[in-house]
Length: 275
Length: 293
Image 1 (cartoon, rainbow over the protein chains, first blue to last red):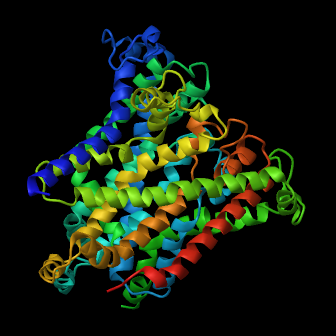
Image 2: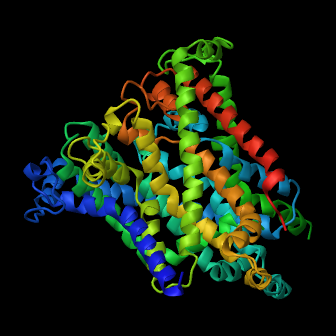
């Protein structure tokens, strides 16, 4: 087989897979612009007979979309701050300090990745109930301030690659640990911090299990739980509206991804490789 | 300067304070509390009652529970190998210096960043027996009348597998890609000079050197398969006729729909034990096939 034929074949394959991956998104957009009466037609239409944006207006009448956007955003941003602070502190201690129990703690932290959320969700739910945080955003935000295996691991790996010489020089000049951490290590770790921020934001923006358990009222609903409730409620077959809602909920994260995709890819690659 | 000495010794623990509290409260503490709960009967309103092993005994004697275990294992057996193989194939496909390859990598990653709820909603529409995209294509291309997918007790679980594999593919692909790019190019050159064909290079260089990555992907894919929740919640709610209730969903149902906290905790421990066992087995078996250079 000639080289050009092989390359052509490769492109065909790449294109076919791309269609498979993008197809559902295109179908989502197409349906979201169809009139309700055009959805249930046989054979189905690939494109709306007349593009309409009325479903987007209609979904805003059914769901308090602005409120839900704000809730999702508040949770995602606060949780991201919490993870950045708590994981960076822990990762710095693991990367640069010697203390009793260090390897045990690090191992214990990494081992928590193995625990299915189903095992811890009932006791954590009880803690939140005790605190009176059921149906509040706190129940979803506050735990993010208490560290996490993924973030700590990611940042520790990165901190370990920063030459110690820089910090030693600063220490000789009389800098305290925290100032070194704050003024030298953190600024140098921007790439890793951005990666962690993107991942955390995405995880909390997309989370459904948390909102399903904790958020019951409409005023507290996030986009994910709002859409899920819409589907399990009266709108099960209103695909025109459901798809419009889906498009709106996916759009911010896709924009974020396209803008910061190299950070995503780098982060995954970094956690996937062994030391 | 005694003060400074004490501070230096305490300092690391100050940095770790949030992490340690989180570990104690949300991980270790919660795991222990869950274990204790599994020996009680508790409807969350009246005080819990200690009933010993009764929850576990009643699970073992429940036919439905074994059904749920079977669904969980079936899901894993269908989803894990296909995810890993497809991701590896995809990584090999995009690991080439072709023009525009970055575009394809980006496209393959889109499902990963999208929320499961949006993805599952569009797939539930695609799976619509009469008007859905999938059955239309099956009919158009192959002349087959597709099944009712999510409304069919046989096909609902495979349908969930399709969504799961499709959504997670890009993630594993990126991990594989990083692994592939870590293999020194010299090895391939040397093998080519020695007359090794494409298949032999793949079999004797790529596969062994990639095996630590493959192992990592296998472990996380399996963990995710055992924890499947959101797909179930959006696509089927466990139906039709409970045919897609897996262990993780059964925990949720017991806890937050039937309000049987003790029983839910017991199921969660069965899930935990199963996951732990399978992962341990994987670590045992890795010696036979994972190559650490």
